[in-house]
Length: 286
Image (cartoon, rainbow, N blue to C red; front, side, top):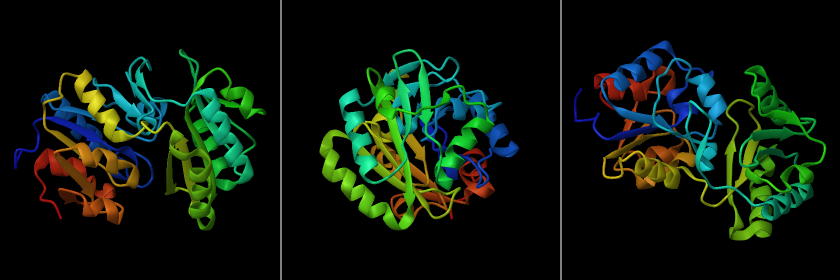
């Protein structure tokens, strides 16, 4: 180890950071994470993905700390799936978000929580990005997945962690502006190009406190690591909130330009396992 990189708490994004561009964790990264864990390094992940997906993608990695899932909507014990904290929409706000998406002719996918069980509820998947989103979860046997003909009934009486819809890239700015005009400060809205279905932008409507920065700080307090140095690793705009609260923020070279501009260090790309090599064997940053 060099540059005193290992102490403190380390929190990794998944897609574009720990995962390679084919959405897999390499054997090198898996073994490297376990070597760090065995050496006593405190580390975990903060992802837009669910705990179900995190568990599948990080199969074989011996995480013990909670994970941040759905961009901070939940802080979750990965072994049990139990939510330790949540930032979720109440039924009225979720229904208003559905109204706004209907005016945009955007098909919603809902992630809901009734206090004990999580569900991912979807319609027909008429556009290629929504179809991909559903198919990916079906492929790894996501037990939360179910079809839903009435999204308004689905959000009634439960908490909603995320309302997701996909729009063509050229319509994204207009769609975000319309959602912000309708929903104001009652929600947080994130939009990002879908890296797996070019030409489509994913829009997520969630609680305004469902963001990685707040969630990572909550995680650190719960783990007794509030005073530990926080190092975070990410590549996309949804990682910037945790960059803002970290003592050190590290990005792979494939990161979004705005993320690279805010990074304390830049490593080799995700396809080269850059962030793990940087932490594990002291590979110099780019």
